[in-house]
Length: 80
Image (cartoon, rainbow, N blue to C red):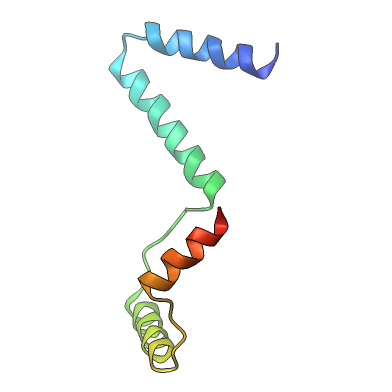
């Protein structure tokens, strides 16, 4: 069975689903998979790491290693 047919079968099963708990479990599995695939398994940083990142940002600003919103918009126009 090809992937498209499998997707359609799953969609049909979800449409007929009348169980909120099972639907919540499916949503959780999908969300976990999205996070895993995108590498967004973020964990809160500790205060020391946070302060280090702030200091790096301040140094970047002082040394003109920043991009303004205007510059970014101009760069994005070139992507198209």
